Amino acid sequence: MNVVSYHPTPEELSYTFGGRSAVGKIRPGTIVELYTEDCFGGLVQSVDDLPSQVCEFPYLNPVTGPFHVEGAEPGDTLALHFITITPARDWAVSTTFPHFGALTGTHTTAMLQPPLEERVWRYDIDLAKGVAVYHARTSDFSVELPLDPMHGTVGVAPAANEARMTITPDAHGGNMDTPELRAGVTAYLGVNVEGGMFSIGDGHGLQGHGEVCGTAVESAMNTVVAVELIKGVATPWPRLEDDLHLMSTGSARPLEDAYRISQHDLVTWTSELTGLDTLDAYQLVSQAGQAPVGNVCDTNYTMVAKLPKAYVGDAAVYGSAHTRLRALAAQYTT
Image 1 (cartoon, one colour):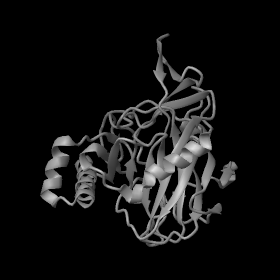
Image 2 (cartoon, rainbow, N blue to C red):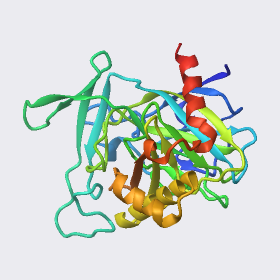
Image 3 (tube, helix red, strand yellow):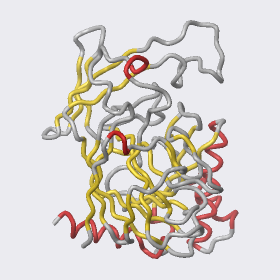
């Protein structure tokens, strides 16, 4: 078993997908042990650390990487299986921002009311109990929330030598902010450049669907991911697979276009897997599918289309990559 560990220094963190040299080369079949910093680079540590005062734009939402996968070429697919995602500190933070979030005026939704207050909440992380403790800022109310660690940002370099800020989700991945991207899930990302150049970041101890206020329970993470290369198979939009479901993502504005992209991809993927014609697959997904929201606050919004695998029979999804990677993960954890 080939295992690589990487803990970046602050200077080695990346803030774009594309436009960066690889931090290392790895072979398909490698397990990578990563440290990822939170979206504030660890600079927001208390309720008095306002991001506008301690952070510098555009140095937000850092990712660890990119990693060059040997043999990856445009037209291939990278499979990233998340073995474990574990908060790296006993605290995490969340915030509200002026002009950011789903329930306030923004630069594209111009309103005359005063900007939303900038406020920080600090959560206590108790790994032994598996909870994040919420503390209200204006009363003594607190409550334990179950941890559900995930990565808000994962992606590859975009096509055509483009560099995209890590906060923007699109066909290359990016800041999709879907709680579906948790441990036990395999993410499929279409390769656009030699090596693929994947990066991971923006760990969340937990997040509600939509990331409504603009931030989740933002946490540094210790993450273990297994990497596989699927040659000659293209993936138009990031896809996810867990033991029970297939999922397609779509990112765009307005939200209904993100919804359409995700549903279109799931319908056409289902057609390919089952041999159903497009309208038969459309009917199946329409009645059996789900539509979890990723984010409604980023530069692009993200929707997920989700279908139980039981409804597509014994189709070998990506040559049964998820099953192979689950087996590799079991070897690693034992």
